[in-house]
Length: 96
Ligand SMILES: [Zn+2]
Image 1: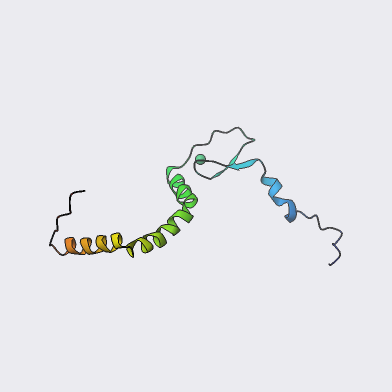
Image 2: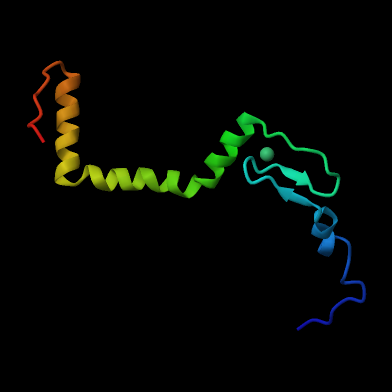
């Protein structure tokens, strides 16, 4: 192991402490200064982006899950049924 330089505790190492008074808004994710006491109003567009960001894993998994489901018998039927409807030959679904 290499010896540690004498000034290893530099500013970049602890720079995140400079912004410790900022906390992400739970509704929109914007860093909000907790110390200044200013009320924060969420931007609706930013809020949608934040919620999509939080759901990114689920959104990514959805495509894989859908692909897997489309290979099941039920999925194959739905693909067949959708093609049939799109081609103008509506088929009646059996009553559930
Ligand atoms: Zn907010």
